[in-house]
Length: 308
Image (tube, rainbow, N blue to C red):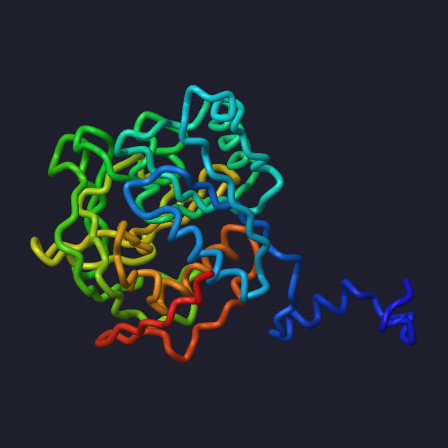
C-alpha cells in the first residue's frame, strides 16, 4: 500500500493503531452512522432534531441522517415507510405517538427489532420514552417509560443510591412535577460517565416519578430528587437487550414555543449526548469531559449553534 507510511514498509498499520490506543492516544475511527427518526411528538421534534444535528456534526465523529415518519396514515408513503435501520450504528428515537399519533407500520417495527437484535444502539430522546405502550419489544428495550401503574415495575432510588423496585399496581402512574434545576447524582462508573463529577446541576429538568416497564438488564446511571415528594428517581439508565443497547433519560426537553431551550444548552447534556452515542455504537468513549462541565452548585448553559 502506497501512503504516507510507504517509506516505512515494515510498519503494520493495525499494530500501530493498537499501540496508539494502548498509549491513550485517541484514534479517529470512521464516523458513527446515526439516524434520527422523528415526525410526531408532543414536544418540538422539528427543533430538537435540528439542534441535535447542529451539536453533533461539528464533532466530526458522526454522519447524521434524518428520516421523518409520514404524518398521513392513509397515504401509500406511510404504509411503505421503513428505514434501512441496518445501515446505521445508532438510531436517535425522537418520535412520540403518546398524544394520539400513529404507531409505526408493522414492517418498520419488525425492521427496528431486527436492528436491535443484531447489536444496534438506540438513543431515546426525552419524550420518546412515552411512545408505543403496546409494543412489548420496545418496552423491553427502553426499560422504563411513561406508563400506567398497572404496567411493569417502577424504580425508586434511596438517598444512599440503592434501588427499590416497586411492583406493578403499587404506587402511581408515571408523572412529573414542575421543571426545576436539579442536582444529578451519578451512580457507578459506567463508560458514558467516566471522569464526570459525582454530582452536577442540570437546568429545568423533569424528574419522572414512577416511570415503569420491564426494567430488565437495566443499569441506572444517575438520579435526582423529585422537588415535591423529596424522593429519588432515575434520570438516566441503559439497557442491554440481547446484542442491542439503549440509552434512556429525561434530558433534552424542548417544548413547543420554548424561547430558550436550556435543557439542550446544558453543557452536561451536550457532553453526555456525544459520549452516549459512542457507547451505543460500541466505540471507545473518547469525548472529553470539558472544563465547563457543570458543578453541583451551578448550571452551565452554552450558546446554541446558529440557526439557518
